[in-house]
Image (cartoon, rainbow, N blue to C red; front, side, top):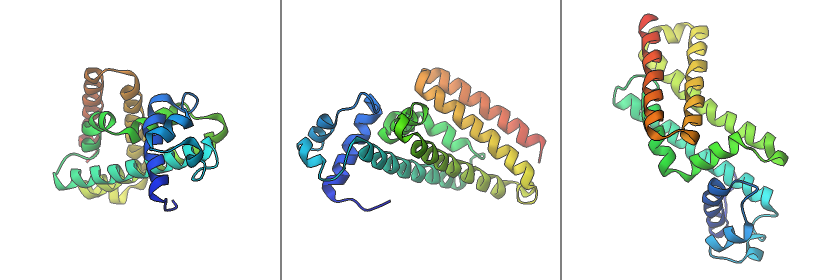
Amino acid sequence: MKALSPSAARVCDAAVGHFAIYGYDGSSLNEIAQLAGMRKASLYAHFANKDALFVEAFQRALQAEATFVASAFRQEAEGDVAPGHWLVLHLAQRYESSENLRFILRTAFLPPTDIKAVVTSGFERYLDKVREGFCQALCARYSWAQRESTRLEIYADAYLGIIDSLHVELMYADPAVYARRAASLLKILDDSLSLNR
């Protein structure tokens, strides 16, 4: 990702929050420019059009959330938490506090048609980071995970299924429903892992 000037970065920061609320179609470049403390004409000095701004803001949001995922798995390892738990247990709080995550999920589930390929590939890279962190957590905890790559891949796919379903819950369910479903999914994951040591 290219380095941005301070004013272009300010535009991207404003755009992330705006796109998180209004999506692509409902967003206004004029409002984003105002949020960034400039006129719309000045915004065009940094970004050729709405697509260019949207893609740059999306890439920056993905990078921020990939950093959060890496941090989540480090926290998990340092706290001796069961593999995959820390991220799941903190995902709802992250969704509430992070415009980046709200923007990413809204965009991933409802991508703008003209840039769908960019959105899809970016979201898949984000999920790859989740998968990678979970695989590393399993390998650190269970000796079988270092030897049995097929089984490791099955658990990694199942964990991404958990994360995907919880992403949907974050967008459409209330916090109590999210908490109940997250706890149930983690219980099934833990039971399965304990049977396969």
